[in-house]
Image (cartoon, rainbow, N blue to C red):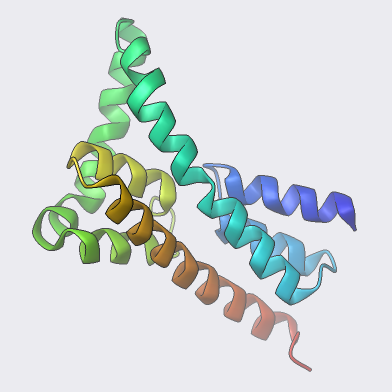
Length: 152
């Protein structure tokens, strides 16, 4: 059980799936449905402070290297393209809506990058990401629980 919870939380922190993969993994591997929601949500929320540190400290250091710079510009353009219109026009609400969509390419990683690129206030960006993550987790959790017959 501990291993399944750990793997689900790692999926929730991972940029390859976030809680969109962590929650179904946990539930399909016998973790209590409520525990799966809470732990995967918390793990996914922890990404924002890590990304903020990375973007504000580590990113500036690595921008000196051309290969990293090209990759960072590519990722930045994708985040700006995906969230750009909403974040630029609606600010907090646009970022929150972008993060809450449980589809590939949206989530706290792209939301953190978009907030950084649009120089949003860090507290507002954290709150928008957290609320968006909550609703995204709720959508994925509800869908997974219903699909597995977990409410019976």
